[in-house]
Image 1: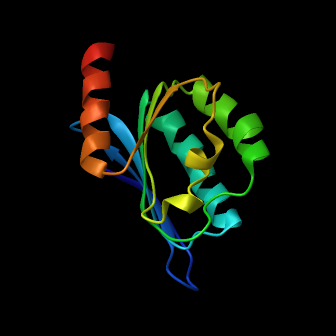
Image 2: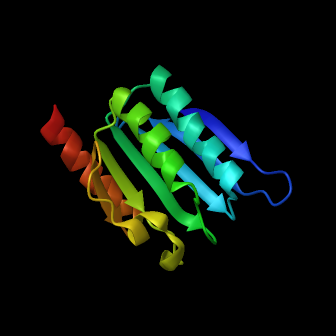
Length: 138
C-alpha cells in the first residue's frame, strides 16, 4: 500500500514509503542523490505514517541511493529515534547503498539503539531477516 512519495523535481531523487501488507512492515525506498533536507522530509514522513500504520518492522532500502545520505546524526538520535521508539519500531533491516562508503549507519556503527538493527547488502536478505523477526515476534 503506497503511503507517501517525496520527489525532488530538480533531479527526481525520492523517498517512497509503502506498507507491505503481506509482511506487515513499512518500507522506505530511497533513490538518487538525496540531499539533507530531502532526507529529513523522508524520515519525518515515516514518523507521520507510522503513527497511522504502526509496525514494529521497517525495511530501509538505500540500495538505489547515490552520494552522502544523511548529515544530521544529532537530529536522528535526538528527534527521530525517540519518536520511532514511541511508535513501536523494534526491528530495522537497513540495506546499504551500492557505494557503501557513504552509508552513515555503516560508518557510525551505532551501539545503543531502541530497536534491533541489521545491515544488509541485498534486499532479499533484509526481507528474510524481517520475516524471521516477525515470526518470532508473534
